[in-house]
Image (cartoon, rainbow, N blue to C red):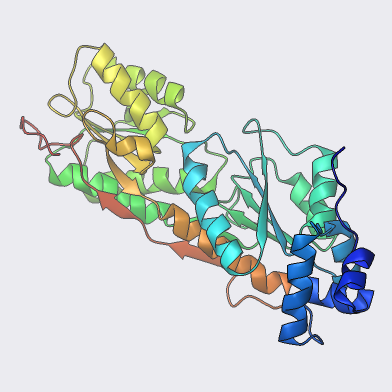
Length: 341
């Protein structure tokens, strides 16, 4: 039979200290000398003692666990979670992630209850449905969001400057001589998608580009959405010479539609994405895109959450990080035939 984990009482007995002292050492509380703490932690490890997070929260008020609600199957999420995990560990916290199965789903009540019981705070990524955050906040669980559904979110948030990134993308295409630029939108329920669309519209006006409203099509941040939207653009009497997609997945879908139509990227149509997911530089040709600082966004989310866990006020309730244009082979000068690496 599998040996059961040791109890706190058994650890304290072997260490020759009281249960209170053992608890203080294991939970990194003051009042224990460095030598005694080291001995107790070594004995606890040798005996296979496992901290009960519920008991820990009852005794110390904290578990040193950060909850993350995310769609782990999306490329956008991978680097965010890496940034969250590494920063949490460096601060002495562990990360507990729950993956949402779909855009419009919310964690089941039992998951929300679990997050409430055993986490010190929660980071929510892409909260399409956010009512569960009100439940957590009502139970005094600090919440930080990455990306926001509304411009006046009640929760502290970390975002990249989607408007600035959109300007970079359209300006790049305009400087290559493109005037008829198609735009594939993201999920318009998110402020980032709306900001990228506004940047596109403002660029069209400021740079005297073709203002044809049919050049704006809906992609919903999905590869299939990008494919269908690009087909709509290609079916126009005068097709665009370039396409800016609100994220890389829809840009990849657009490139597939262009190839299926017997055209080439970038010789016939240039394409720009947004995010710089790992697939972006693996495509043929590699995708020109606006790089979001995804790992830095994850780190910033943790750095916003930690003061809230300690009951401190934040100097600002929103952190906005700049984006960077990464030029690769999917864009070329209008009328040119050259490729970039």
